[in-house]
Image 1: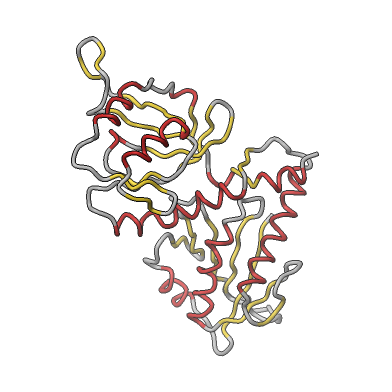
Image 2 (image 1 turned 60 degrees about the horizontal axis):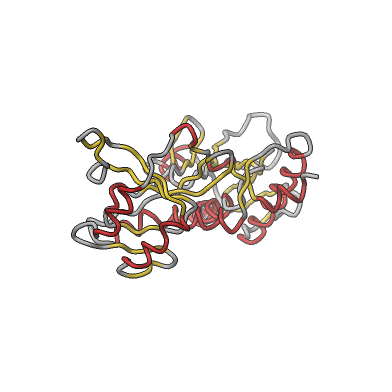
Length: 287
């Protein structure tokens, strides 16, 4: 199940060369034949634009470009897709044909109707699929949106901060049978730490000694345990994230990190972001 949007220039034609030229080198896009695939490795969002040649016997109105994005996805997918579609349409002054229920119809592109149309179809996807396949992984919408918002701004934030300050991505993990948010904090280095369910702390310099030697590992800390420590040692707040900047790891942080138990890696599994669904919609359609 997916959303399809068709596009054509208001005046003149549109060539495969124009299509390739626009997407070639554009961030997060890969050209593959007639398709331009968008894949953001950080946020997990993906969709595709496709160029269609006109068939010789086709007498219908010709729309050379199609956009496609799957349903049954986290709702933030459309937040990332909308600017990409809008910028492409503005670049070539395109009109659209949107055959979806509650869509735009034929004519001008409308950001609000694009968003509402995809959301309507996406919810229908939840309703249809969950009826027969109710066993899914979910998180509250507010939490999913916060993860997406952090990850999509991560690169810009990393460029703005001091060179030695680390900005982690937020991951989704299956931890002991439930979905959690997590980020890494290697050796408690200077970093901007967003609120997550668990912190994964890679220990190299801070690895505890076993049998008179250091053994590298990964320790885990729930947010409720580590947050007071971050509060005491923050330089400032970056929104809801803790900005930690120091020349050497404070003694209190060092002792805390070294006291943590290493994580059993079998209790952790990385989740594909596109498969962690909006809990409110899941509850709505799972009896």
